[in-house]
Length: 296
Image (cartoon, rainbow, N blue to C red; front, side, top):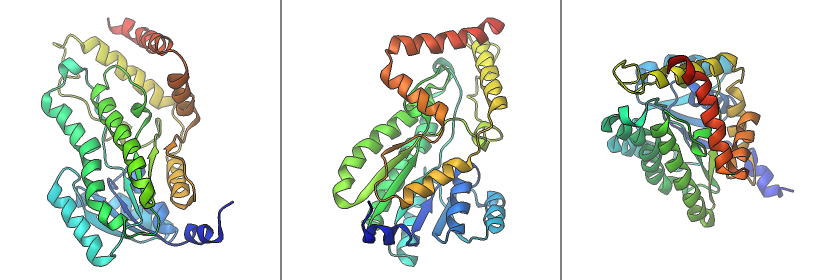
């Protein structure tokens, strides 16, 4: 049972920094948390994309402190940290949400495409977290919540660069959890599967050669695109579920390190963890073959 002190802290408004808030999970995190009375510093790389966020925040009756932040630019990171220091003197929660997906077979991926996704999905998280730590140490009980993915514990063909960025994030997060726990800072992972967010629709990214008929992988890429589209068409999961989970993690006196919001992803996690890799490999290859036959 939580102590009286823990119960009091559960209901204390927090100062929260969220990255990648122009759409998707980040937008929902900000709108939900602001409506609950928290001080939310909502950041995005391009402030011209602020309207969707501000409309949702207004609809729910909250207020956010909107600021520019490019997680791949160390000067931009220094600027936001200095801003928080000057205006708030501490930070209670950092939600590292900024990131994107990328589809493309390894042989078709350029060096800049691979480095680009690592800069945002991994090094961006690393750099923001490092610079935020002095402010997090000023909090009574701070939290870093890293938004990962089911792709952080499993792999698929054509998503190797994205998988690599999320696997790196998971490894860093687990190590950081052990390092910061003695100082009262919790590091948590959220690993959602497929939800109805813009990363799978308007913000979907393909490698430059993904649709190149001259690529030896062209047939495979088109087959996997159809597989993804079929899954998206059946997807009914509400991304608000992930925002609710994040809110719970902020208030929980003893949160879990690994948090998987949707049931299919939990099944996938335990399948990957408990069954022999040979079985998992067989499963992925046979699902892929069904689609490959149409284009092979």
